[in-house]
Length: 187
Image (cartoon, rainbow, N blue to C red; front, side):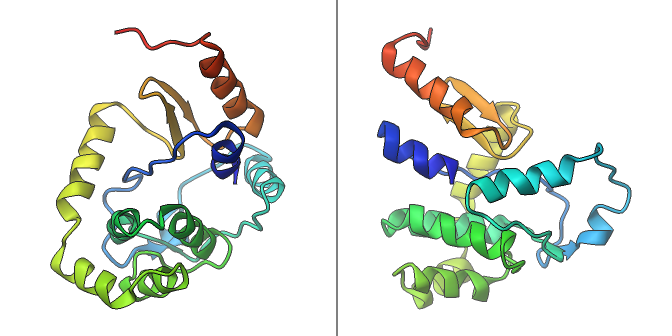
């Protein structure tokens, strides 16, 4: 994936924050057809998105259920604490976009966590008790207050944002410019 490549090539550090793209979804998610029944995309949009994914090694499908991702964000916080964020982030992405799994379900997340070397029972307990709920809600509130409106959004140096699935070279250009000192945060 592009961000993972960016981390390798430029030594940047990845931190994943929660963002709720569809805040009205019920906990179990909704069938894709129901969520997108009135949505129309420009000609070629979906094909370009799939091609971009394929260039990153992802055989992207349209998952049958649009997941409520709140539990996935909570599980991501668990993975951060367990030192397995990159592995878990990749596993959740692949489960949803390549296999169409409902990443809003605790058991799916626990299985993915176990596959990344995390304790599934501990995650199950953390999700049941809402251990990371407040942290996820705070991150989502920050994203709304910052005016974020799309995913993915990659923020460099807490100042420069790239929104959407851009070509890798867009990310690399910003990273190079920051390393050279061409882009500096003013404050």
